[in-house]
Image (tube, rainbow, N blue to C red; front, side, top):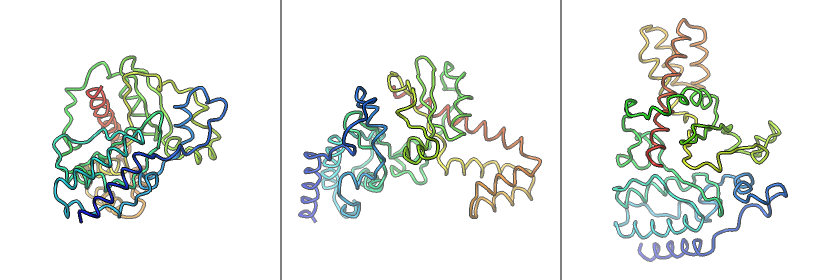
Length: 294
């Protein structure tokens, strides 16, 4: 096993010493003066494994190695990340090397942007301890007390909640409270977004790239939206509708069928109010976490 680990570390070291070239040849003339924006606009999302050239199955199970072996591979991986200008920003301080190794490898096929100039922050936390790769060592499932929420942000909570509910990614200036919103598809699949809308990120006059004290608020993940729907159904007094909603959530196309049932019920306004409150709670939590990390 040690001989294999040594070879794997050598392969990782080679990547760190010889990082791949950018995925584009040159920036278009109107973006030459801003290489960071050019990178963001022209660099597609790709799995880490594809960028590095080492498949996930090349990594042995962390539970078949000792602590030092896991730590040695982690150190080699972090050097690769450093060479790619990727920073793992949510690593729990007290997580054992064996579990950190498993967390990193379990996300090895996660799509990222390789941005040699601008750099990219990498987060592995899923936001839910049930499937978070950091497990019990992550604070993602800790209760957030709204009484701790900074009052200066109260005015932006509702409008940001409305935008992220429309699948917009919001950028908030913590100092001025100005915010900008970007269609999530523009970030995840810029080519497809351009085909559909004719718009490109470089053609938009975004100001957030020059902001200091930036807080990013992403739309809810599907599992987060699912949990809100399930919680609403469980709180209903109407047993018949409750059963129908829970059945819909456990079958194909759960979101579509849930919404259809709600639209034809007497609880539509109640659902809108419940969802609004939950999305605003999500926004407050993201702002609180982002603000405390500035």
